[in-house]
Length: 207
Image (cartoon, rainbow, N blue to C red; front, side, top):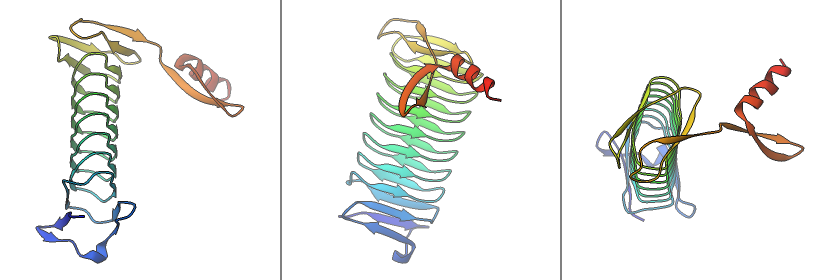
């Protein structure tokens, strides 16, 4: 299985990382790495900050801040701030602030504030403040203040509102519908969805 891991242009010392080839798990505490797994899928990465990843599909990443990812489909990311993602379809992102995403369809994002998204259709966004979106049809948004959406399949600019969850209309049809915001709770061992308003009222009763 051919891959390379370099730091400052030199191969990383083998003592500074572990590679489980059978389970395809790569772990290191090092930062400032270039990880070239261009032709390899199904890898689980755990690294420090400021790393550059090039992989195929079905990879999982747990990384710090200032990382750059170029991947295929069905990848999962859990990072901190200031990361850049260029992926294909059906990826999941959980990040902090100031991240940039360029993806295809069926992706899910949960981020902090001041992020920029350029995506295709059927994506789900849960973000903080001051985010900018370029997205296609049937995307779902739940955001904080000062976020703006540009619909990519029809020219439409939407100022997204705080405490509102919306779903864009179907392809080539402007506008959106508001959907109920829900919270999942566990009651007697069963997961139950209730409205966010009911959840907040429930919490207030036990303060």
